[in-house]
Length: 435
Image (cartoon, rainbow, N blue to C red; front, side, top):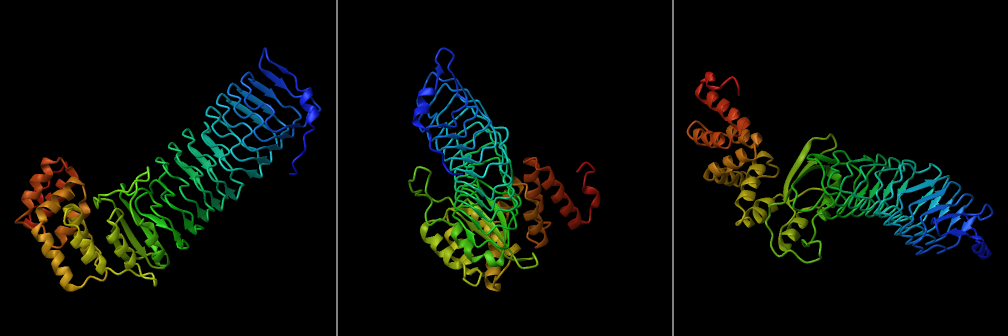
């Protein structure tokens, strides 16, 4: 819409009742000029009637403004209501354009519904507001920082959006449900610190995911087949363990997930690396079968990070010798991570040579008690089952593990171990009915 040029003489027609703090625009006023009421502390209510255009910063920092009626407004300029911290209610008509930061820091403002006439919304238009739901299902692009740090926001319908801009919903800590079935590009930090939003399914249309795009994803989340750009820590910070599945054509680009160096939010480098933050990557072939399994770590030292990145081959394969040499031997100070890697390599023995396999088995035998106890503490029956199936847990050592499981009140693990013991000894009646 072409921007109308407000007649400056109209300013003389504006009559503000300072005793009540109300302003009613005359019928022949179609535009509110830029900065017309900026900084006005006495304004409480504005009835804009036939106004079609609201200029940039027109009501900026009207800190006591509580309500605005603008049923005929078509264009709301940039920062028009920025820092109107008391604004609680606003009525839209058939608005078509909302400018950048138009309602930024209107911390009490909730907008129950936006009109379908809306064509363009600017960056950070509703950032730091009290918006609880946002429905822009007809729009194909969601601007940067649109609803960033709207801590009351719980639902967002952006189902036709192809592009979700940077920081679009960053800091929306209560956001739990997002419809984004058509998304092709998710920008940097789009859902950063959205701790209640843990997507389990990403849209099949997805092509790229930006840096720090999500705070977390559900275990086993499948990365769509078309994705070719994967940003740094795009599935959450390194302090949270993750498990994802991706298709073979996306494997090489996954090397970008790992930052060259871990940094804190204040920009300082992290000078210690716990090697606790793992991300399990199951690689899928075209039919959805697992063709590779990578138990990787997100918080390695820079030299190990570089080695890990170089293990991703351009033909979308992985050099598994990295896991068996550099990674495994480098875990000297983190025994638990080393235990887990040994188990995972035997469960998923891709490109595992017989000599290395023998070394892993020997390692598990030497450290079986500790590994089994960790499995009990984690209530990980899968690892216990693997240890039993491979004969590492047998009738000669199972009683000690069983006693530990009972002491930890790990009822499911105890039931499983009792079943294994009964099968080993042929005493089916050893399993109590209640288990």
